[in-house]
Length: 198
Image 1 (cartoon, rainbow, N blue to C red):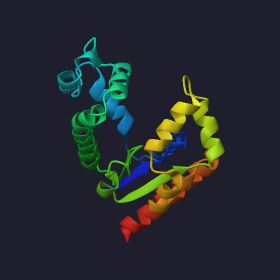
Image 2 (cartoon, rainbow, N blue to C red):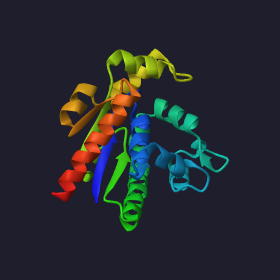
Image 3 (cartoon, rainbow, N blue to C red):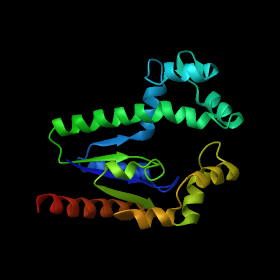
Image 4 (cartoon, rainbow, N blue to C red):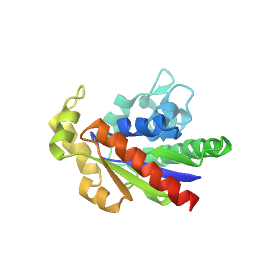
């Protein structure tokens, strides 16, 4: 099975583009959704996080606001959290890919915002980056509820710059208009299918 890694900086249109792949019949795994699953009550991350930050567990689930507060005051927090979360997310992804194989899919897609930052490009067969002009990106992000310019810049500082992502990717999809993005998805899938069949 051919595994596509979809990535892109905040506000670049990744969720919409992943939806276009799903509409073409490609099974899609979403890293953010996996984190939500393991954080909810009964999720795999609840007890390990309780061990390192008890106040982050509220009503049996991981409270993201409490986690953010811990990360803000403790420089070791993010490292400890990643040691818990990354293996559990990897396990969730492996389960998804196994199921996609069993279901007979020839292509699957993993949607991972920090694909390059976490070394995820090693476990996919091709990387697609979604991209848009900086002004389009800024406008999209600042329209989100509760988003500030300062928070936006802090997120950007943690991400590989868009230009570098595009240079490292196998394919880039321009998401300024949905129609162009959808056409690009179809073109890329056609190329990948030809390569698989060759």
